Amino acid sequence: MGAHSLNKEQPEAIRMAFQRLVEAEGSVELVFGHFKGDVRVLAEAPDRVIVGLTDVERGQWGLKPGAHLTLHLLDRGLAFEAIVDFQSHGKVHGVESCSLSMPRLLRAMDTHRLADFVPDRPLPCPFADQHNNVKDGFATAFGEDGLELAPPEGTRVLGEVMRLNATTTVELRVAHHESLVLPMRVAYFGDLVWGLRIMDGADKTHLGRYRQWLIEARRQQQQRDLARFSPGGLESAKVAGRPEASRTKLQPKVLVDRDPLILVLAEGETFPARLAEAVGRKFGVAALDIGPGPLKPLLDTLGANGGDWGRVRLVMIHHLQRSGSALERCRRLTQEEACPLPILVAGTEEEAELKRNRAVAAGAVDQLVIEPFKVLTVIRTLDDTLKLFA
Image (cartoon, rainbow, N blue to C red):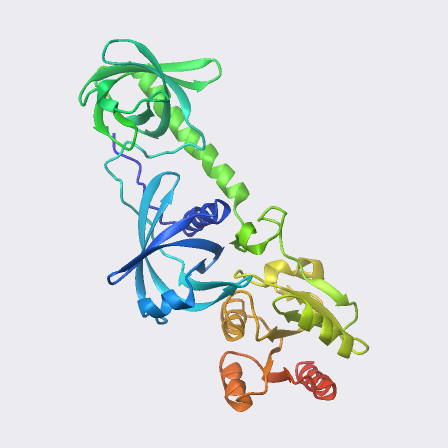
């Protein structure tokens, strides 16, 4: 019977693998030329993966936007390889980071293994050793033609318990009151596991029941994965420094509840609070310290749904973002989310004209100078922009 493909090709399946790494505070290996290193996965978004690569390391590697890197990862004990592009660098909650493109394919590296399906927890699986003594093992992975079996705790040399090509009988406990007995042969040694292949003389009823159980186990795991999937992306709870679970959804904080409402995207609340104090008699202000994911799914508390962006009438992007840059966020809003709202990029007055040209090229209406902060200029710019899009 043909093996189930281990490659991950569906976008959601690929994103789920990275979200599991984010949850586990895991890492991936990056390879670029003769450089190689393990980097922590800080966040995941629909179109990118953010890893903890410092500016010094980026400079040493000579990474520039568009550079191709090879990425290696382990997902549920299975090795995968992918090609990703370096996109940009920035910070996530003050941690230096780099954005990589979301790969289109995770290619399985261990295709020889009898490990089409890896359960969340090993299953008890008693087996007979080469002296016909019954041992308490654990099945750690399953394939349509066999499984991988971990020996009892304390076993150091697999060959002393079962040699290569040795035959055994395993009792797979697939349910509380149901066990399947299958004759198997040792096909290979893995990392403290035996690869056991089902022998031709296996009871057809038990073999059919085993394969039917495998199909159902895969389906149930996919359902659990889908239920835990965060379409808007996921951040590392440890890096974010939040005590709550990492899947808690970000929501904008309304600082001044008034219409027209301006949404400020900024790292922290210092600038949004200052803006609210300065313009709050005329404009409403909401603040959001956004991560790498899309913006619109986070605005449901402000009435956003379907093609409607809710109460928000203008988006202001502060030049300090905890994920990526303000121009990058602006491009994603206009190009990927098709945001119909006017966008202002707020920054310093140094090279103001150059920054304005870059902001307009990224899809913004204008570059708003907020350092130094001139209240009348800010109010006039907000007024003119809102009237232009009224």
